[in-house]
Length: 166
Image 1: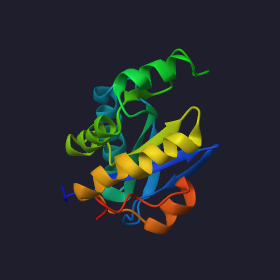
Image 2 (image 1 turned 90 degrees about the vertical axis):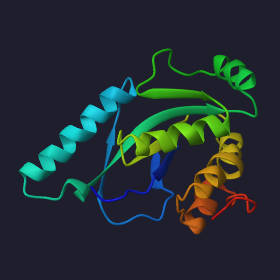
Image 3 (image 1 turned 45 degrees about the vertical axis):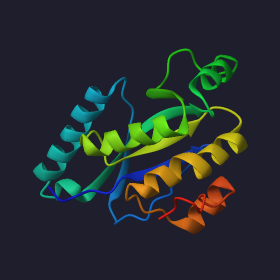
């Protein structure tokens, strides 16, 4: 299989937007209760593509991640507990730090769980967008993820922090 770049999308106010500069492939979003289930779903989608006579890479599988991040994990957990978020997540939920989220996203691609992730924010979109553009995205950029800078600025309302942006 060819080397894949991590792909990142966000869903804000029910609008899905990919933030990465990526090759053309039909995006397919999946929900999963854990990474193993997501990996199995991705393998099934790729197998079905091959059965249809298409390349396994003709679809880009995006795993939905419900996220809430803060400067430290304790604060993130406390804040999240106060949100009006569903008790049971629709997909994998991450509550923690920007560095931890960046590592999870990298692991999703490295372990062939999915081609990328869709980050879903429950509340305080402006603050979460700031953590994404100043923390998560620069870390992913330093690991080789290429972002569409104009899209990031337009969707998140802030450019990727210049200190680590690639």
